[in-house]
Image (cartoon, rainbow over all chains, first blue to last red; front, side):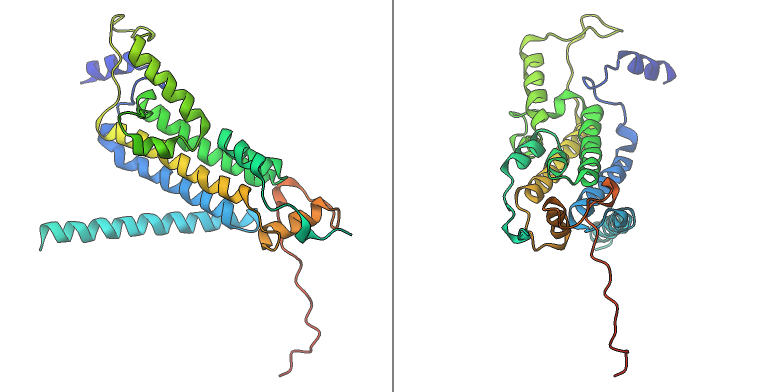
Length: 80
Length: 176
């Protein structure tokens, strides 16, 4: 496994080849949600010093509702 | 004294600048802090998507609907052209482990994440374009900035951007 990972890293060409991150792709949703919240609040907020707090709240809300939606869908498929 | 309401509302040059470089339109309108934040946020997820999935995430023929989102940032069009040239000519730098290795585009979750990152970057840039394109002088976010442009209030540091008006003192005595 280490050998194959080493070969993969050796063969990797940034911006040409995909990153070998299939195992934890879900974690990549967190920076995406943060960016969406920051850009949205940057456009909507009247003063810039409010952005960190409001963007953090919005990002937390998005993640929370994603988790709730995932739980609801899991219950729908597994329990019903 | 000029009327802030007489200021131009439509900024086509700023919108085009935002399409070319996210945040550039806000920078042109004098909202440098806002422009820098937009450039950093959108640029980060666009470059992140390209880094995660490689140039293969820009594929106009493979997923045209996603590409409509991606092309809302101008550099996506250039990268897509580069990707097509790689596919057609095979002119790739050799792989360190295999000099004759063929180009292999991303697939699966990694490809999906790359496409998602770059498409969302484009759609967020559309928000920024719309924000620059039409700016209502009556809007609290813009009113102070227009007054600054017309010299009615002194300019403020870049990080202050569009401050609100100071609170008015209540002289009514507060007795009902």
